[in-house]
Image 1 (tube, rainbow, N blue to C red):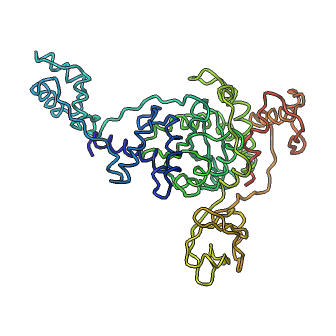
Image 2: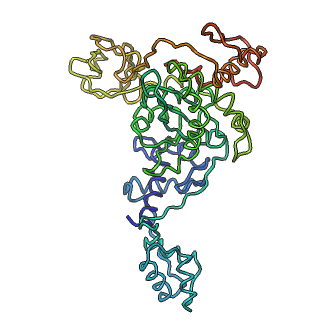
Image 3: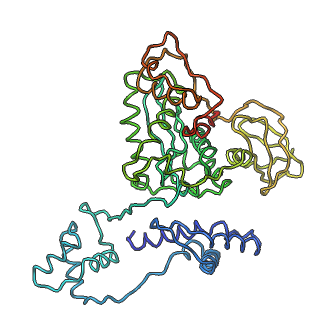
Length: 464
């Protein structure tokens, strides 16, 4: 696909992502008008990463085009502009490029000047190459320009990814984490025994409860990140879910850089004294994040992540909305006997739904309580008839092996400092260096210091 054609498709995808909800044919004129007005009042992140406003008339035009001609109708028309530079000069520039594809526009211009030929500007040559699809790397692949994007405020964009960690209690551990693009603060995280949607939701849910609801989330195309459960959670909370393009790792550069910090400043300390289990790993990691990482001045922002994150008041979701966002749902066709099946279980539903496709909404850890919805409206609960499985097959909890004796090391000191701050009691630094005769865990206090994150700690929200 030529570069120009790829650009047109990127623009069409952006336009579709903006108007896909407002373009629903099931909406009334009043409902569509309200959605379009709301879209026109905010700025949107365009295909080049820049924030742009979109007028209502433009949105109406896109919706009409999509409903009339589908996705292709959203592609911008090809611009045909007669170049000011003579065709002979441009032909020579093209011949020099095709002679050696590794030549840059600057190099081609220098060759033309050295040979006594008239030469256009470097930018003119670049634009002409782009029109012909000749912008390539030395290996012949298309060149791509990456901007140095940064969100303009906390909560504008979170980026999520997974880190493959050490072996803990005989099983490989995975870190599912979300970082705030503006502040570089780690807003939600969870170490687990698998890189699946359950652990991903646990990390995200903790971040939402403690740090508020972001405007958008950027993730890759791993199986957990493209799941229907994550898409539903974002839709309920009004979060725009963005999937990075394949092999475009630079779009997630900030969290990849954070993972390098995790390897060099946290995981390296576990080599001599590995944690006994995932619970201990999560406790140590939470302490390191809140005590060390969040309070260290970032080399690029010149502020600590915690201070930069506090520049805006987070919009916290209500417990009811948060619970609704993380319910799972599946669609089933109601049989002639007014029953539906879900993972081997049988349920009885309202007889009026016979032959209809209904939505079953449930907590993956409790398959005995199923809510039935039809066309988005609740239609009572499904009555269990035959229950063979009480939790969803994917709802597997991490096994907890017997705890191992703990010793004194750097991360333990950090963790105890964190616990002491949460408890609001003075820190006896001398006692931290003395070995303990038994495995003690600092108790929770009922006070909290002003600069401790306390209730904002994601590990307190993780009940799974």
